[in-house]
Image (cartoon, rainbow, N blue to C red; front, side):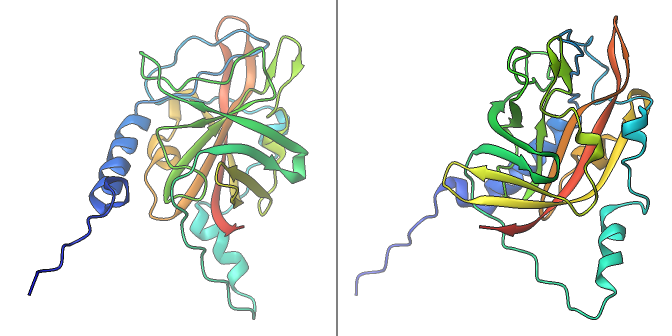
Length: 241
């Protein structure tokens, strides 16, 4: 009897690859800071893995009390209805469009990578309506912590994430993929972090479920150094379509 040949999984579908990628992503992002400019002027490169500063009035009103995301979500699970089971993570497919319906955002996505200084790049300043997605991390709906960034403003006026600090807990963020599917995330909380106390692990740390971090500049603007803080939106996958 001829033994049956074992069909090997593609390398990118193996558990070893996923674990290795998660570990590598964590190690990289812990040393990454998003460089925020203002009015078209890039900020000076921050110290590794730092971003943030004093919040503006708009940003200060956005944070949701209640601590981490697990605590925030538990508030909605005390009702009589049983919570829906979490959606299954999606396979890998690049991001193409980001929508935040409550803010009127519907923007194309460009892939971002790390520069020679190990900082995450930003979308071109002369195209302020673009959103950047870290191509070295999870794609929309994929397991792990995905990262999207965009400008708050440029020399010509407000940019794509001008109102990001005002997004409310429970609002949805939709990330469309190249394969036609859409990952729908629900906002858990919004935070504004000072450069000196930016919590790398909280923002960039690994996750066993699909999560999303959306970042932009915030706080005060200084002509010599740019914005003093970063607005960070924390969200988790709640639906796919």
